[in-house]
Structures are given as structure tokens and as C-alpha cells.
Image 1 (spheres, helix red, strand yellow):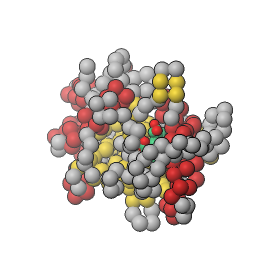
Image 2 (cartoon, protein in one colour):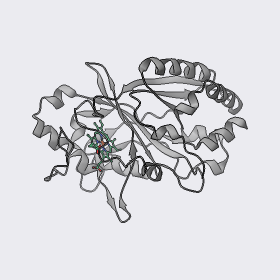
Image 3 (cartoon, protein in one colour):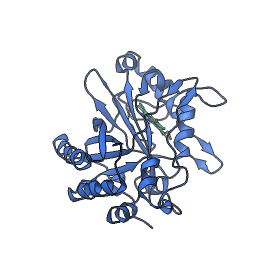
Image 4 (cartoon, helix red, strand yellow):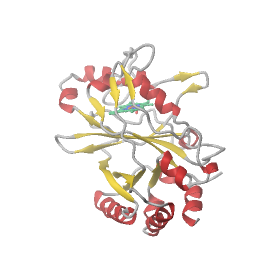
Amino acid sequence: MATPQVAMFRQGLRAHEHLEFDLRPGATADALRKAFAKLQDCGIAQASVAGFSGQLWRMLAPPDAVPAGLQPLAAIHGSGGTMPVAPHDFWLWLQDRGPDLNIDAARQAVAALAPVLMLVEDTPGFVYRDGRDLTGFIDGSENPSPADAPEVAIIPEGPGAGGSFALVQRWRHDLAHFHAMSVPQQERVIGRTKLDSVELPDLPDNAHVARMVVKTADGELKIWRRSVPWGRAAVNGLQFVAFSADPQRFVTMLERMYGATPDRVHDRMLDFSKPETGALYFVPSMDALQAWVQG
Ligand code: HEM
């Protein structure tokens, strides 16, 4: 099987940076290839995760490297409001031991890609305490184990095999509003205890966890989440990042979050956090990337 971009499974690095780019008008496939070869020469490509919009990947790769279902993320309208989308062409996720190393890598990447891609979003993130989001709740308790993650995230066969779909959304929190509630009230928003992330026995049906657990005939829908907090004292949130072998899982979860479902129940978390960006990317296998860059 083709080798996935392994950095999506690497854990333990505390500094993150998410860069999103738009294609420059007139950028050719050949100029893109040269820019990516330069990115690889810097050594950044091996340590990072690179995702492409469907439009860009179709321009670069042969049809058998393009997975079924590679469509732009569509806006969702439901009882919880409208989920915004902000499609871009390329996403690069850098992770390292410190922000000093990431900024060097980010600047090199931006320079290597500058002839063909324009930087439009740059979100530095960090691991907060023992893997919590800034609400104070542990994020990732019910993530698949690292051993199970590839099965959840990687397309097993057919077009795009060894690749993955990534949902990337920058959420902004209203922490003052969230932390004005008592801890038991906060726990009913998330559906887990704050200190040690135990699921509540009497889960409200609009709790985040209740909306995100989706049971199907084939079992529970699984995604591999790699989100990190971002921001400063006054402006902050969660850079939500998740991978899946099937992009429809994201759509199903987001529709449940926004109450775009027959039950019209939306996720209570939307009262305290809202996405301000949102895009779906295809993360090709290392082999597909190499095949393209080497022509
Ligand atoms: C501000 C945004 C978000 C925050 C703060 C947040 C936070 C959390 C927390 C604290 C948990 C419980 C612990 C855990 O299992 O990780 C959780 C679970 C989960 N979240 Fe989120 N989340 C956010 C957005 C999303 C989005 C956009 C999705 C999917 C599209 C999602 C999918 C899930 C899933 C699948 C679970 C596990 C549910 C389970 O199996 O119990 N989350 N999230």
C-alpha cells in the first residue's frame, strides 16, 4: 500500500502552525511542480502535512490519484445557524518542538511557494497543558488509538489510496461566556467531566459529545482529530483538524452539530464557539506526491 503522510500521526510536538494558500492567477502545473520540489529540498515536506483542494489536485495529478468524493466543503444551514466555508487551494501543517523552529520552516515554505501560491491564513497553535482545549476540557479522549488511526484516516484502496481527507476549521471561542458558567453547567455543554473527561451518565441530547457520536449499521463513525488551541489572551479558539478516509463522515457530524437534521437539535457548543474558516483538503500519499513532483 502507498505510504501515507506520516506526520498526521506524529504526536508529542507542542508547537504547531497552519498555513493556507490560494493559487496565484496563471500559476501553471510546471511552476507548481518546481515550487514543491523546492519545498522538499528545504526538508519541510517530510516533517509536515500537505493538503490540496480538489480543484488543485485535479490540475496536478492523474485521475487514478484523485479519490471519489473530493468536493469543496459546502455551507450548512440548520437550527444552530450557518456554518461558514472558506475554501483555499493548499494547506500546510507544520509541527515542531517550539514556535521558533516553526516560524523558520513557515517562512521558508512561504518563500518556496510564493511564485505560485499566496498565503491567506497563518494560524500558530500550541498544545495547552495536558492536551486540553482552552475551555479547559481534555480534547481527544475518544480519539482512536494511534494504532487504529490509519484505518480510520487512510483511503485503503482505489483512486487516492494511501491518502486522506482533512477538515480544517479555525474556531473562535467566547471564553468569558463559557467560563461564566459553573463547572457542572460547562460539563453539560461538552457532555464530559472537566477534570478527567468521563462521559456524563445523563448526557443532554444537545451536548457536544452526544451530537458527535453517530451510530450507523457499520458501527460508530470515526475520525482522527488533531486539533490544537490558538490565540492570545483576548482572541483565541481551536484550530480544528481531523482526518478521515471518507469525507461524508465530516458532513454528517457537521450537520448534526448545526441541527441540519430531522431532529433540529444543534450542538450547545455553538453558543460559545464558532468557526471562522473551513475547508476540506485531500492529503495525498507520499508516493502520489513524489510521483507528481518527479514528473
Ligand atoms: C471549538 C470546537 C470544538 C471543541 C472545543 C471540541 C471539543 C471536544 C471535546 C472537549 C471533546 C470530548 C473529549 C474527546 O473525546 O475528545 C470532543 C469530542 C469529539 N469531538 Fe469535538 N470539539 C470541537 C469541534 C468538533 C468538530 C468540528 C467535530 C467534527 C466535525 C468534532 C468531533 C468530535 C468527536 C467525533 C468527538 C468524540 C465523541 C465521542 O466519541 O465521545 N469536534 N470535542
